[in-house]
Image (cartoon, rainbow over all chains, first blue to last red; front, side, top):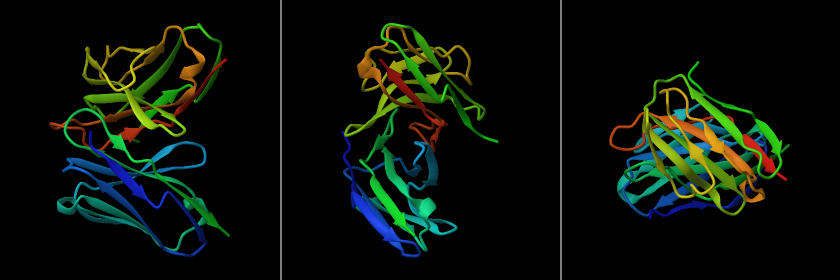
Length: 108
Length: 114
């Protein structure tokens, strides 16, 4: 099956810092999404981004489908950004394949 | 507001006592799915449904049942729960255009089986 690798696995930032999270995938995909799992366990949709670039406030994402990777940028990080960030892809068919996530801790 | 609603959010039950976790979506999505999330194993698909009365197994279907009698609802049934089904469960829905498109997830149900 398709492999989804996220890096780094863990990240600690001071409030106000910027970061880049990476998602590599092993095959062409129809769908790529970024999620934030907050400390209460909820999965929050960040971006649906099979290709191209999108921005939403301090967050932006870029997917280069031909090179099989996606990047999530977090600027001016806040403590509320803490949690686990997941990349999930769909090749063709009926399931999303999730990466193992990047665990982010933003300290005051 | 477009949303996927799961209930209950938290549940503690005993081995063998049948339970149902409900899932409802208000986006008229054809596709719905259940996942479980476990430490070290990530999110894995249990069952999915392409439309009313159309369901199929995902990667880890053993011990679970589902039904899709209405488009908006997709309940997950554990007929005889066991401790290894202690997990965080998510319901998801999306449009389906040859493959899953943007998926929306419910708030999660944290299940403990003792």
